[in-house]
Amino acid sequence: MPDSAAARDAAEEASAMSHPAVAPDASAAYGEHPDQVVDFYAPRDGRDRAPLVVVLHGGAWRAPYDRRHITPFADFLARRGFAVANVEYRRGPSLPQQRDDDAAGGGPVAGRWPDTFDDVAAALDALPELVRTTLPQADARRTVVTGHSAGGHLALWAAARHVLPAGSPWRLTAAPLLRGVVALAPIADLGRAVELDVCGGAVLQLIGGEGEFDKRAGYVDPAALLPTGIATAVVQGREDTVVPQAVAEAYVDAAAKAGETVGLTLLEDVGHFPLIDPAADACAVVAEEIAQLAW
Image (cartoon, rainbow, N blue to C red; front, side, top):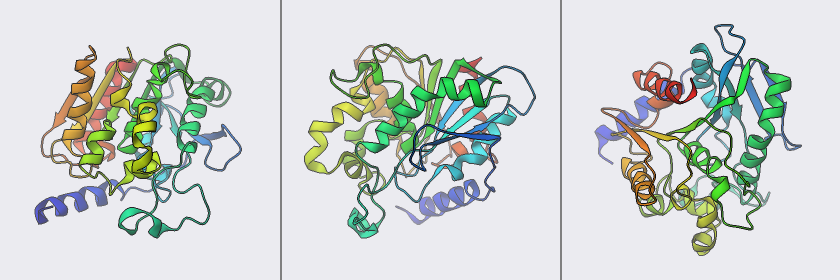
């Protein structure tokens, strides 16, 4: 990576992570594990009924990156009049004996199989009741799912559970009741992400290794789960070197081949992190994309 690109990435990440975490208005568990929790943010304009935005955070499905880093983005959406559900899920190694240096490149292991997907499915299934009891201002009939990076992958996957292969424990019998999905720099095509070694081998770690890819990718690769019939938009920075534009384009191309149109908004002079940085103009673009589906 050229020094200028590395400097841009570092500056954008520092800006996005400089905001203090914003405490939720309420939290609710959807399971017994400490990571099986949803934080709720009420619309700041005081409206009685507001569309619900479900946020799935990124961080390459790795344990050190939890939902706290995206709470300023959740609060930003709440200040735009949305009700927000910020979902936590299990990440990182499932076995205590796995060490950080077990991952390629010496970093933390990405994801848990099948726990990460168990959790996202369980959280989305539980949300209507959790919202009813915990955040009555939210209108679950107007739900949009969004996610950043690895969370963008999970958002696309959550909207595709009704087209999962028969026998999948996560399969829904009907399409989820969503207004749409807005995926932010998503790891949307797992095959292309592996080719580009996105996030230092995180995709293969999530899947369980190269030997498992062919067997498991058909259950969790959004590019293989098309068409969904769910309105879908992708927002991508052209200068993103963390999850390059080529990954988003591969997903959009796969959708087109399946007969489905996916909106792709490419932002000039924008990298990976401004999409969730309340101080960045790109974040306002994201809010508008969500509003177009939600209202």
